[in-house]
Each structure stands twice: as C-alpha cells, then as structure tokens.
Amino acid sequence: MTRLQLEHLIPAASTIADDSDIVVIGSQAILGQYPDAPAEFLVSKEADVFPRNHPERAELIDGSIGEGSPFERAYGYFAHGVDPETAVLPEGWQDRLIVISNPNTLSVRGWCLEVHDLAIAKLIAGREKDLDFVEGLQRHAMGRVEIFRERLALTKLEPTIHSLAAARLDRIFMRQ
Picture (cartoon, rainbow, N blue to C red):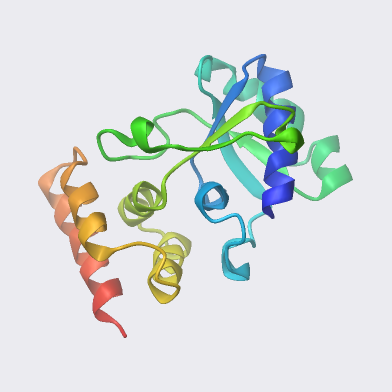
C-alpha cells in the first residue's frame, strides 16, 4: 500500500464509521511518518484501522471495505477494522500519533502510530513478518534503539513477555 492509497482509504473508513478521525495501527501506519517508505514496507494490501471516537464501529469498516469487499476488488487494497486493543502499545502512544490530513483525505484525519510505538507492537506480537518489519526499520535507520528500549519500558507487560520482546530487540539491533 502506498501513502496515496492510505489517503484514499482513510476518508472511506471515515464515511462508513461516521467519524472524522481514523487511527491506523498496523504496519501501514509507517506511511504517516515516512510517506515515501522503502518498498519493503509497502507490500501489505491492508491497513488496520479503527474510528478514534467510535471504536465500536470498526466492524462496519471491516464489513464494508474489508477483505473480499467490492472496495478491495476495485482498488486492490482494503481496510481491516480492528479493536483499539489489537496492538499492545507503550503508555502515551496516543500523544505521539502522526496525523495525515490533506485534500486527498478530504480533511479527514488519519492518526498513524509513531514508528517507535509501531515497532514495540511488532516486537511484542513477535510473528515472523513483524520481526522482519522491525529488521527493516533497523536496516533503513528508521528509529533509534534507545527510544525503542524506552518505549518498551513504558509498555505494561508480564515480565516474561517483556523479556522476550527485549531479547528480540537486542537480537535485531546486534545484527549488522
């Protein structure tokens, strides 16, 4: 998905949810901070989103412009309506959201996770694709390891999960 495609998806989700603020929490949130992100970050056809003021309406988005919808068939990408709790995020993440609002979004605000917060969610999820994403951030110098560590410390986790996420972070940033 490109930044332009995300800018198309944001007002579509807004119309369906009747909410002028759409939060993007999945990998495509990187397009808020890095509109011209390297190609390896643009492979996903979906954006994980929820209406900021009416998160309970995420299912409407999923049902209307989600996977397999006429929207996806027409444009080749789609929105996945998610719950705000889908991603485990550091405290204060809402204050660091990166806004996308321009003529392409029809002045609807798309609120994208800041890259360090996004990486923490990926490290905690720990799927291969998530770790590949964080490795890509490291390769392209799109974030600072000290901030990743600070954000991990701000994340409420069971000690075992915290240790596992910290070990994943160390492994990725020790590789050169």
